[in-house]
Length: 220
Image 1 (cartoon, rainbow, N blue to C red):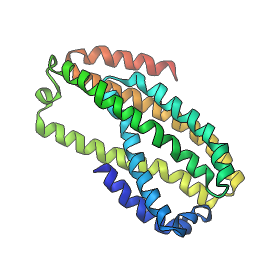
Image 2 (image 1 turned 30 degrees about the vertical axis):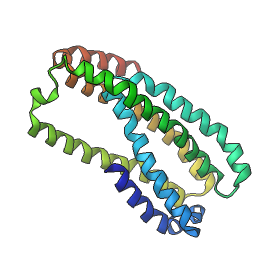
Image 3 (image 1 turned 120 degrees about the vertical axis):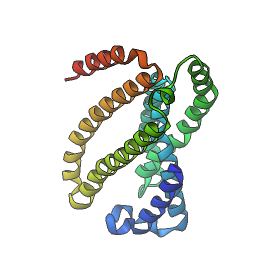
Image 4 (image 1 turned 90 degrees about the horizontal axis):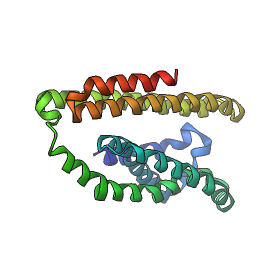
């Protein structure tokens, strides 16, 4: 569902990209670019959900090598893609690592993490027994809506900066923005892990809450 919606939104954005920024006008030049951009949006939505899936499956430790590999590949691809396609090489360099890392992590999730989580869950009471289906669906719906609004706000800020500011001004904006976003993602990851562990083992709520508070305090 998420990939389908992302694909649809990606097509819509590609059709008006030139009006948002001249640097994105190349997306409108060729139908293949429009379709390619839509496909990348679908893949990126899977990539974003992938980290949450790893946390939910008790494999949060995989996130570090996963994101490290993505960053290294992106940096390595940048000079090569820029040399091959100066006009849109940066965009391509940002996309290529996703095509490489995403299938590997998805294979590991379905072949390793999911079977392990299923086996472990058989021995746990589970969140359904604690909350009930109604409360679970209400919580999931509210969480999805809040997360979607939060993502839109965060993603919109760089787009507004790119549209309204010069390249130099955008660079000054990007550095503090990325620093704040990194810490925000870290805190979000800890709270997601806390929710997941507490749902998996309700008897450990106090223990994991105290652990999360101690970990977060170290970064303040």
